[in-house]
Length: 356
Ligand code: SAH
Ligand code: SF4
Image 1 (tube, rainbow, N blue to C red):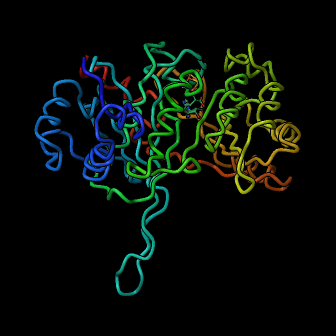
Image 2: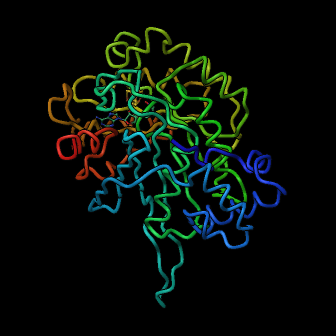
Image 3: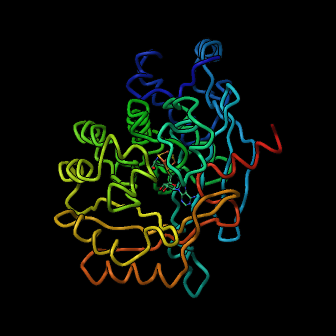
């Protein structure tokens, strides 16, 4: 199996290809022109192209499957070189706006949700990814390739602004080395140029890793998958809570360096009759006291055999209103792509039956 050049920052690549300006040229071909064959890099000398061809590949992912939802989100299933598959979702967050003459006034805002591992070790009771167990970490190049492949496939202009959320399959902080490397590669100005403040890392709450990520001072935004406000329920939903309880997470969040204009996002997956009561909302307000937080309520998305149920809309609205009334910004995540097996792991499960 060959290495991919998507694994490298520009600085690393300039140690490999000499003289160093070649790295900039390669970045330009790959990330601005979506070229996936060294042969097409016409301003590189022939022998360099050949040497690169012998040793490296460009994109390690191939598209296995694509599902388009009625709301415009598109879910991709990619195969890695070793045959493992991962999911990536393109979410158009705001629709395009045009003026009276039909000219585009505001472009659609895109967010891409990337996977960081094949499977996941954390084993949350509500999550389909957990069911398949853990296979392996994704390499930095495999994380970067998800965005690159999707941009190319969707004909998204290279300079188009994008946000990245590490909310696909896997626990990003359990693969911190490769994820932080991917963050840096995404940031490269001659590459995809996605600034750290446009990248959000979501974690199930590995407190010691949150501290490590903070020490790296990458400038990324943080999202915490909280889902419960007391340790007993959280342990049942997320066994990792036995090792890192709610108090330890809150402490780690308080110590995390974050841009003064930004907030830490707390994700709260709402399950009917389990954590959807106003008493939980009250505890949540208390818990977040002193943190510049925003809460994102997520409807539990049922799958065949899932032990939980989707909450009703009224209950969600009440929960949200309680938080808003008590000074906490709260939004309800519109279940993007519900009709395309929205929650992580679901497209993959489906494809198992079809492609083995
Ligand atoms: N492992 C990290 C990041 C990816 S998890 C974390 O847990 O934060 C991906 C997201 O999908 C999480 O926010 C999780 O709460 C959500 N999710 C998992 N199963 C779901 C389901 N059945 N319905 C709705 N959201 C789900
Ligand atoms: Fe892993 Fe996140 Fe799924 Fe939990 S919710 S099993 S941490 S991917």
